[in-house]
Length: 98
Length: 384
Ligand SMILES: Cc1cc2nc3c(=O)[nH]c(=O)nc-3n(C[C@H](O)[C@H](O)[C@H](O)COP(=O)(O)OP(=O)(O)OC[C@H]3O[C@@H](n4cnc5c(N)ncnc54)[C@H](O)[C@@H]3O)c2cc1C
Ligand code: FES
Image (cartoon, rainbow over all chains, first blue to last red; front, side, top):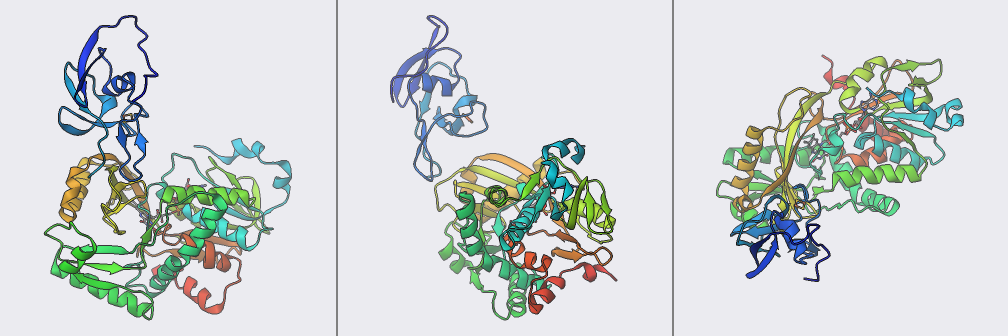
């Protein structure tokens, strides 16, 4: 995690609580999970199962599958296709099959 | 439809005056491999590849990427020898192509497994492999595996697998990188290439051919499924028809999830599992369909139950360029000297053979035995 490179264009947007890797955060409502993770400074959200390289959401439209995370216990969800909901539990850094 | 007329202006003027030594119609794996072989053997040749539109049916961008010898030509001795020779030429071909193009085409000769789901299937495979070994004077190597032996090679096989055939001569490659590496190397060697240039008519001149405004001394038809139509214009019977195959791609999995090459599945260098194996006669309709995708997925989960945990990320259908007996067709026109046609349903497996001995055949620099082998795969076998 680093300081976020992203910020909301809306001034003082309404916030929504989400839980990322067990820690509660406030993020602007209506973000996708991928956008919320970037907003929080998660520049990498998983490791490539073959090379081990850090990976992050890339296309933000559901085709590259680089953004896989676990959401509310469901593994390998595309973070860019899901909108955050209050107290959604997100786990990053899921490795592939193993 | 795109025709060549609208791109004529892009070709330097002098090129239109002098006839090309070779025009290759079609820039798929077959046309690109042949151009690569020709220019390597005779760098002074002037070669023009005329390719169709990106919306064409192109087996070369929808295939499975196997370099597969097992069973290829068990009922066709020349094809058995040719497939084996092609696979044996691959390591050197890959080294050279990677070196020239600087594209890693992910070639691997890790051996291949063909699975049997019944004792009867295993005995059919066993007969086919024995025939292959016979046709190739023992050149084709294989081992019949019972269930335990198959499991020792590839853990995680489903209950229904009764055995398998293993051959160390099979392998795999990334077919998209292969195609772009061939095009890149060809360009570096000075082969000219025109895309969006669907050839409608070929005119026979007193010497050579006029193809969409370009003159050539010799011509090779490598237009995939369009070879049948174009062949007629040069008095060649090139009977090919489409056979659809559907392919599924999973998310990336840890390396070693599946180790070998196999017609049902392989793991790519990037980690995805590629799943296939369907054969449908649906004309030129290359769409994927839910029923077939489900059937393919069921079959592969029966083979490797643990794959059920992986998500699918992509699927597509593509049309095989199939001859009546599945073997390749290497044809020269009896009527028009300098006209050739090449059709095959194993353009990946045979890429090295096409760049190698086949281009010697086109250049008429082959020794007698090789010439007999290649000409055993002409269209005479289809005449009654
Ligand atoms: C599902 C599937 C799986 C396969 N798996 C394997 C495998 O594992 N291993 C293997 O070895 N092979 C495999 N194949 C077969 C292999 O892909 C083909 O043998 C090979 O791609 C054929 O190449 P081609 O250049 O003849 O045809 P194509 O790829 O069809 O290329 C023909 C080219 O000609 C162009 N063209 C067409 N008409 C004209 C025209 N009139 N003028 C100018 N250009 C024209 C097209 O635009 C195209 O670029 C598979 C095929 C399919 C469909
Ligand atoms: S970012 Fe590409 S699929 Fe989600």
